[in-house]
Length: 319
Image (cartoon, rainbow, N blue to C red; front, side):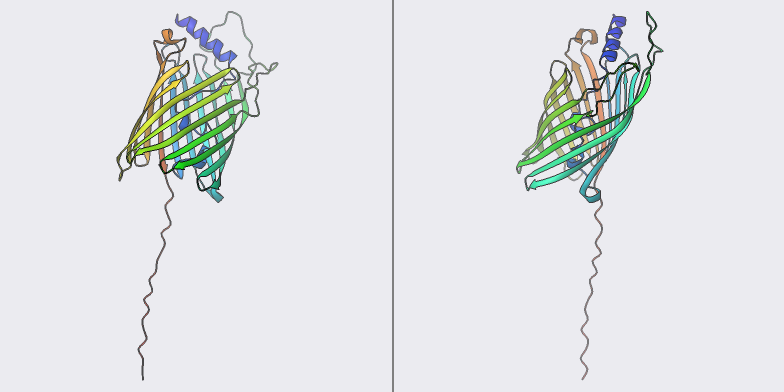
């Protein structure tokens, strides 16, 4: 059974090199979801570490690690970020690693409506290891390791409905340049463009409670992903900025997952676990993936204004 499942995963890797990773915590990822996110992040600066492991029950895990460093409204009110990614898929150790930089700019339409546009570009390396694989016939792969450039675009709208509701809606295109992914020099396997459409609302339902419903749709060639869910946040201690939250989410025909988070001052930890409900649920025993995100956020220190009080003394009148 395990050998059969490994073969299924290997076939998936070789025939779907043009398919991207996916993340359950997409709402927090400029790297994965939309390069214009940086313009509307909640703090001036943030550092994020994101890790996802899946399919541990049936093969070597598919493991993804992402680190992001972002700054909002820096030089001339422009926003920037740099992101590093390492992804390893299955027993073939099919590895994608590299980094991108992103730029975004926010535009004020009126007091309640803002837009942001974003661009990201980077360089990746993909390589594969045959140490753990056995072939019936010898296979000659020319490009067991290769580099490729990547270009992405994003658009985001923020709309303040009233004092209690903010609405965010975005559209993004990844791999606009469609780089070649083939393991054979004589063939071309172009990376398909991925389109993301997403929306969420931050709704303040009480002084200490906030609910965030969200929808995400992604399409890359024949691969589609649809997520719907909602998070609930509770402000426990305002002075220390301590917030607890949890959420329930559904990925269509793939998984149900729950997430929990705690924020203390500038630090926040988010955890989620996916329960597999796809066609592989029997083989995986419903085990899907776990994912965590650790972030540190901070704002610029306001320059201390030196206020000099000059006491004017009246000169005595001399007769």
